[in-house]
Image (cartoon, rainbow, N blue to C red; front, side):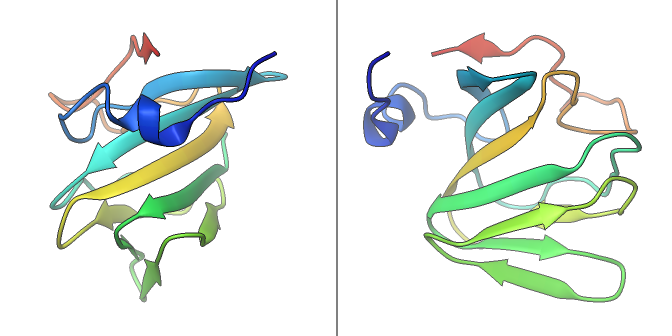
Length: 119
């Protein structure tokens, strides 16, 4: 039971769209990632997703609108809702989601991460 320093965790990697696990809470993983550019359209049929912006701006595209998240803001994407995260510059995010959640949801491609590094 030690504090987790987010800046120290983010300093351990430099790649984008590759989430790392920094903690567990019940059956949830607490994940962080550096993101830049555009991800893919996808949805999660059985899991809600929680996105928290630590640094930068995250743009979450939905089919009918775009929501901008800035540091200290969070957004819950309900299960089944198609979405596409994107940024205009490097952004640091934290996510809390069930351990079974794949980063690409209902789409499997070269960006899918089935095994995540634990920091």
